[in-house]
Length: 89
Length: 372
Image (tube, rainbow over all chains, first blue to last red; front, side):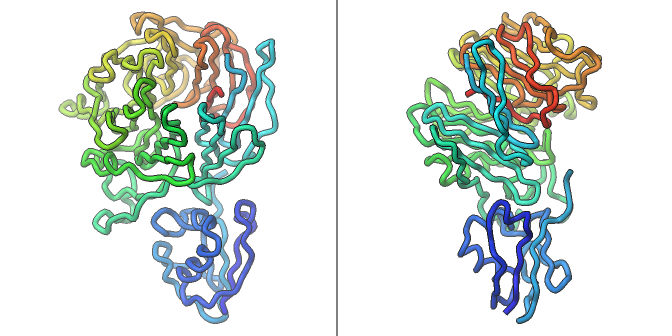
């Protein structure tokens, strides 16, 4: 099972625990989590379902490549981190 | 006069109360640290709405029911799926492009429907969609009649990279009559609650356009549009290229020249006197600072034939405070005004703008000011 973590800055707005997922892609993992927590969706993806501009997702230490369709694959032991990109002031 | 003042800033929502002496007292801020792009006190039921624009996590809308101290997050407008033939291509997501992303960037205006429409809200957004809620923000629907107009594809950014609706006017005589102001896309009106729309910017002039397009209504950049509540056929606009006024429900606009400048962002219209309006002039448009570094408020009481300038109580030069579209407010009495600036100044006036009193010089940049 892949393991997914959400940054503390997200917890301030919507508490969402780290969890395990058997999803095969990032998009599938998000879909399952959003089904449990509908309010979280708008914090992570935009109206068209793309990863928000100032968020980044790392899978096994590498930033995901497909920010629009979230097709990056997850393996059984992937570690997934959803974090905010550093921007603004 | 209104005793409660709401101030949306880059770093939170500040709520102030006036005492019997006209002094304003500030309570603890709400949403400290978060940009508050718009706030709406709903006069029908006392609900307070605050639109946030979180840098990382997108646009959010919160509401506080009348009499409650608790905020609850409600739904935000969500754009429908973007057709494949209008998909965004890299680097093309800016002004006037049909490839603009169909995704909410900001709630730029928030207005209640009429007294006969409990629960109805209008939200003007960037990138240019007008949304309606029939249930106080539980759900929102994009107004497709306006969004699907071919002219919308030619709207350009004004203030932000993408076009936006900053003004929504619900006619106090007829809630089905709705007027919106678009930067940059002119002034549009619906007589049937949003089912159909017509462009009503005849007479406006966009000096920045090629000569053959200067009179094109769809190319106009009205920075802010307001109507007189007692005589809604009188509509005032602080436009990118000057001040314009209509006395026939926006059928025809007339240009007005003011001193020290006709450029600015905000306008306040007297609720009972259609010939009386206030502006905060600035040097156009590549500078956007007060003329000669001197912050003044101008007022006309004769429909724009003449203007008075007031600076008593405002900072002496040099002062580079700029007042944005929603940074100038007038209350229902028409004598109390408030004004907030991009450099965090907040002032009020209890004598129709002739004398001002500093409330704070050190707020975060002010986006919107409203009386409740």
